[in-house]
Image (cartoon, rainbow, N blue to C red; front, top):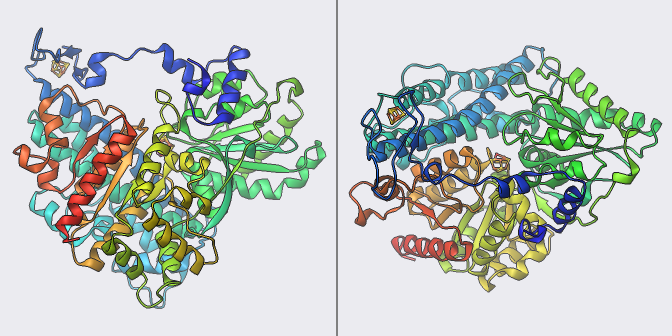
Length: 637
Ligand code: BF8
Ligand code: SF4
C-alpha cells in the first residue's frame, strides 16, 4: 500500500518513503507482511499446557473441546484474563517503582526533590494520615509506605481503592466480592486461576478479570499519577508542539520513549546542565523530545515537545538527526534497534529487566540517576559528530497544542467562571444540553490501522455532536497533531460545545479551551476517573449514571484492555476499535457487549457499562452517542 494509506501524518508518510528507499522495514511494513491467524485473533487458541496447543474452530467444525475438556468459553475468557493481567502488571510495577523511589529519596539515597506539597497533603489526608507537625520527608515516607502496603497486605482492600473509588461503585464491588486485597496477591491469584486445570467457569473468570481491572485502576493508574504528581508536580496548562518537525537539525536530539518518568525527568535535567557541552561539537544545544507516554509525562509537566506516537516510534530515527533514543519499558518496539543500526542513532536501554540485544545498555537506578542520565546525554553529544549529512531529512511541520489539564487545572479553569462552585458551569452546560456528554479518547495507535485516522475521526464526530473530549496516551498525540488541542479546534464543534469552551477559555485568557483536553499519559486515565467521581458526587449519583464513555479506537496493548476493564467496572461504556480477541466465544461477547435486558449476566447489568467493539469510527460515534443519550434520559435530562 501507498504510505498515505498507512498514516494520516504527512511527516510520517515522508519518512516512510525515505525508509523504503533505504531498504528499511518499519512496523507498518511488518504489519503488512504478517498475516493474522484466525484462531488467535478470535481468542480460541489455548497454549496453557503441553497437551496442546488446542484450538476450537468457531464454525463448529472439528473438536469443540481442548484435550483437557476446556470449552471455547473457558479458553477465550482465560485468554482475556491473561491479557488484562499483563496490562495490570505493567501499571502496578510502574506505581511500585515510584513508591520505592520516594522512599529512597527521603532516605537521601536518590537525587530528586519533592515538588508538590499540596498534593502530598491532600493524598495523605485522603489516606487518613495526619499531616500536622510532620515535615515533608516524614509525610512522603508515610504515604509511600501506604502505597507499598497495597503490594503486601493480606486482608482488607487496597488503600488506593478506598482513597479514590466512588462510594456507590465500592459498595457494588463489595457486594459482588470483587474487592482486591493487594496488587501482587491479585496478580498471582489471577495467574493461578488461569493456569491449566484452574478456574474453568467463564463467568467466574470474567469476574476475576474485573478484580484485575480494579487493581489496574487503583494500584496502577491512580497510585502512579498521585505519587508522580507529588514527586514531579501536578500538571498545569502548557503550550507545546507536536509532530516530527520538533526534531531540530542544528541540535543534539535525544528522544525519550517509555513510561516511568524517573529517568526521562533526569535526562531533561542533564540536557539542560550539559547544553554548553553540545556547543563544543558544533551543535546549537540539546533538544529533548518525547515519544509515546514518556513524551506525555514530560509534556504535561515540562512542556517538552512530542515527536510521534506508538506506531511510528521508529521514524524519528529515520530523520538521520536523532543522536539517542532512550527507553525504559512498555510499548518499546524491539524493531527500534534494527532501524537504529542503519543510522548513527544509539538506542539506549536502561532497565535491567528490559534490554534489547544490540542496543547500548546504561543501567538506571534511582540511586545512580544522575550518573546514568549524564552518561546518556554525553553519549548523545558524542554521536552528533557521527551524523551522515546525506541521510538527514526532517519533516518540517509542527502543530501547536495545549496540554496539562490535570483535574486541579480543570477545576481552576472552571473557577474563573464560578469561583464558589467550580463544577456548576460544567454541570449546568450538561444539564442544559449545550454539552451532551463527555468521552475519554484513550490509548494507542496500531500499525495495522491507518495511524491517527480512527482517533481523529471519532473525536471529530463527537465534538460535532457537542460531546466534550478528554484524551490521554497516544490518542492524545493523534488529536493534538490535527489541531484538536488548540483553541482553533473549536471550529469543529457543535454550537453548544463551542459556546461553553469559548466562555471558559475567555475567562482564562485564551480564545477558547481546546475541544480535546489533554489529561496526560495512560496512567493518567486516573485523572479522568477522578473527574467522573467528582461529577458523580456533585450530582449525588453513581459514576455509571453519568452521560460519559471511554474509547480506544486504535487499540494495541493489553494495558488498554486493563484500563478498559477498570472503566467497565465503574459502569462506563468502553469502545475499542480493534478486535479484542474474544469474538470466538459467544458467551464472552454477550457478557461484555450485550445490554442488560438481552443476556442474563452482563457487565452492563452488573456495573452499568458495556464494551462496544466497532472498527468504523463514525458508526462507533453513533453507538456511543446513543448510549450517552440513554444515560441522559436516566438522569431525567
Ligand atoms: O501506555 S497509549 S501505545 S505508549 S499502551 Fe502504548 Fe497505547 Fe501508547 Fe503509553 Ni498506553
Ligand atoms: Fe489444551 Fe486444555 Fe492444555 Fe489448553 S489447558 S492447551 S485446552 S489441554
